[in-house]
Amino acid sequence: MTEAPTIGERPAAGASSLNSQRSTLNPSSMIAVRGLKKRIEAQEILRGVDISVGVGETLVIIGRSGGGKSVLLKTLIGLMRPNEGEIWIDGQSITGLNERQLAAVRRKVGILFQGSALFDSMTVEENIAFPLREAGERDQRVIADKIAEMLEVIELDGQQKKMPVNLSGGMKKRVGLARAIINRPSCILYDEPTAGLDPVVSDSINRLIRRLQERYHVTSVVVTHDMKSAFHVGDHIAYLHEGRIYFYGTPAEIQASPDPLIQDFLLGRASKAE
Amino acid sequence: MFVRFFAAIGAVVLSFFIYLGELVVLAAETMRSAVTHRLRWRLFLRQMVDIGLLSQLVVVITGGFTGAVFAAQTYFQFNKLGVASGVGAVVSAALFRELGPVLTGLMVTGRVGAAMSAEIGTMKVTEQIDALRALAVHPVDYLVVPRMLAMMISMPLLVDECIFFGLLAAYLVSVNLLDISGPYYMANMVRWTLMRDIIMGLTKGFCFAILIVFISCHKGLTSREGAVGVGRATTEAVVNASLAILISNFFLTMFLNIIFPAGWQ
Image (tube, rainbow over all chains, first blue to last red; front, side, top):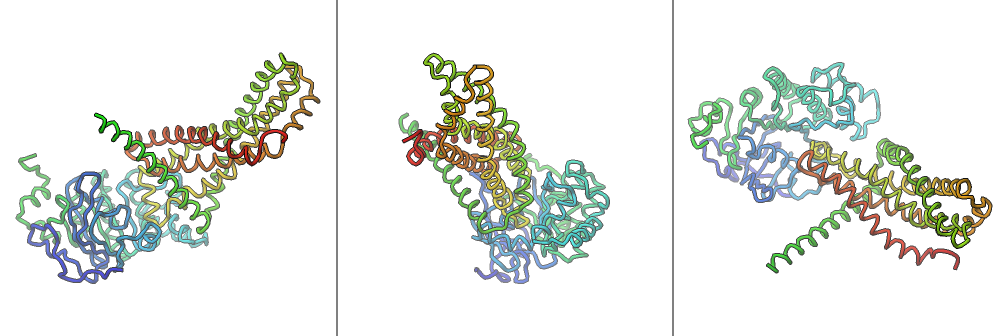
């Protein structure tokens, strides 16, 4: 197995911003990515991404729609294979692992999908209990207790018998989140957690993400283009632009950045060329 | 011009062999998983209900009416030759060796293969299969293995059922409508129906089960581009599995006839 990279081994590729070198890999990283490239057919989606996320840290990856944020997130747990580059999860390189070998790594990581990806043939409680049952838990009392705890965390008490088709978008996200965290992963990946939700529901999801960070001290990677969400939940923010990390910094640093590209994105301004 | 033509032919041939390769890889992965990983009994039993139990009406109607019409057509020809009592023997041999397994295979492809492909395809395009993978569950273990085992058990039984109702309908039509002597009909049928005919029918049913399950699951697992992609995958699964049944039936017939030759030797 390849050794995890250490501090200053390599600066963030393609970073044009002053803060970009701060995304350099460090040894206490829960997630470390180096030189990640991904092509889908002829299109080059990721062109050399370097990021690291420390234990207990929340990194928000922002960027334009179609910019490769979701691809990056899925590549992190091997749902998509990179063409080049290396990924370490909790110190273990996942590059080159096959689907069965990846299972051990994936047990450490929960993911909330953009469309929630709930199993539509199962009720809410069956969805939430799915990872427990698959992990071999057979004690119905333990399962019921954990479901009750999760329903309390996501504030959906009394909805456990509903089918996913009868849930609103926000409720689906909550159930997806409960399913992702029921086995207490060390890290949670969020793919556009507030996309398609109204501002009030978005705010409740942001609060839920914060609450999970405080309650379980998990490492989080949040992919979003919702800046309110990014500022609310992020310890650090990385701006993915043209397949590379263009900016890396704290929410305060990104807000203070004079870079016109960053400012256009933050203020939702179309550039003149568009 | 010629280069482009041959390149196009080459591309089609290549994609066909890639497709075959993918099917073989899926089959190998499924077989390995069935042996080395625990079976999810609930899923398996649910598939037994979906495939075995709920296909019965279709199979009974198919077998019954095929037996009835085949008996009538055979009678119309045999009666001219004065050997009408041989209808039972011909219908029985045809149902056991060809019509039973092939028609059951085609009907199960339409009912079950299409559903498998559509269900797995929908799971694929709605990221449910990615969710399975992210939750450290291999999609082959969870989706394909229970379906494969349920198909392997259900199909031979469904073939049996189809043949039984075909024979029953043929008897009723022959004796009640076509005026063939019942005892003669039965005597000829029993005399000319051999264990090897039954084994041949069951073997074909088992082989068709494997073809249907892997072609349908593969199409579902590789479907793309939303609802249109799922629709296309479902259609292709039904067409490919039906063609595979008809084509493989010829080769199975030729091969199995060496082991289980037709009629008395």
